[in-house]
Length: 400
Image 1 (cartoon, helix red, strand yellow):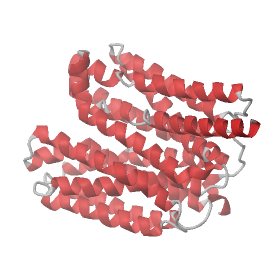
Image 2 (cartoon, rainbow, N blue to C red; image 1 turned 180 degrees about the vertical axis):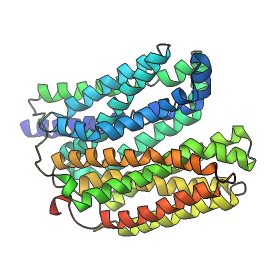
Image 3 (cartoon, rainbow, N blue to C red; image 1 turned 135 degrees about the vertical axis):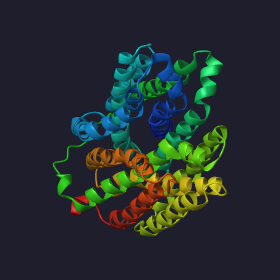
Image 4 (cartoon, one colour; image 1 turned 90 degrees about the vertical axis):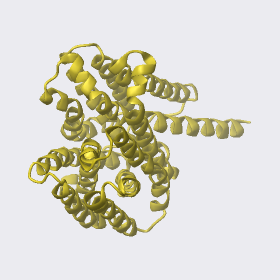
């Protein structure tokens, strides 16, 4: 009987761990992507300057860049579930503060939102490696899919949510408090279940490894950064590009929605396949070919092939993103090192990413056709191929 109870408890705990990954991940992009569609409405309601408006999307990225390494160090030796719970509470406070109603609370809430998401970004790969070590590929796929799925719906339905709730922009960006609350309840359920079953909620191991001396860690970090340069440049500027090309403004949102939805199947399947490969260099080449093809289609034939280009870019960028997350687990030997690599890669990566939209937009000032801006992304793809091939080799960061 005890053996049967043990098996049953293990199955229940596995199911709860999966729910933790899904619901935590569901909160790690949507609070950011829900802002863009209602940014004009927010700016008009609170009389924001262009600089203040830009801060709503740049603050979270700056928080990722500035705090990922710090959070990875704080997480060392601490309970991973407690870290996730702390991040969600901070995210919830920030979500509520953003909709309170003035410029100060909007911007300070954005700081808390960025910090809360940063904790989830950094710690979740370590949670997967520690609690679901036999299912790293599929759980990383779930991690990426949950992030991209809610991000896509947040982009596509943000305006409608404001209308449905009758709270306008406050409803559009405030509704995500419900997702935060569900994630908090799931983690509390996990902690309660482990306590009742006298199961250990073990802290992470400590790692004395200096990842800044690891070539592999730098290659993974730069790969993540270049992937993010392309993603955030497209998310920020594609609607403006398409309007310039003559596509109706109402349709540009659907092209962007197509891009984000196209990431979903590959972000789930990709890590499962990649986890079974000796190395992932073939996937890096596949990513680069599709990504370059889509970027050149946008540059040369944007009006006629906008949707095919969006699909190709969604597939390639989705696979690049999920592969970046998978590298944190499969290129490390312990959950402690996985969290450290996650922190380093996201600090460096999002610092690099923060320049992407700015450079893409600045190049448009020199070339009204946007071609030079897309050539900048094509150059980024070449760099992504170079660093990705090195990052994907069959080795661990501890070996270098």
